[in-house]
Length: 102
Image (cartoon, rainbow, N blue to C red):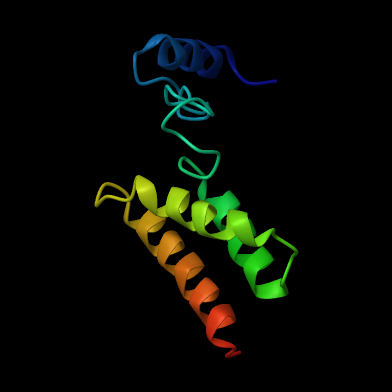
């Protein structure tokens, strides 16, 4: 069990507006509603999974392939460089599969 001092420090941090840092931020408004597809606010892990699915040739209906990549690129900005790199890797994987290269 953590010491009393540590528990109190954790309680103070949790009460601060920034939080403790071990909790996920609140989800962005929009969710799966209008203007926000399920891939538009994908996490880095979900983008990694999408890249793996592309590389391994998971079955995706042809009419959904374009919209998925469009949703991935929709909210791309300079705010998070890790997300920009992850989206770039997804696009490179899709291009590699489309061109028939390995």
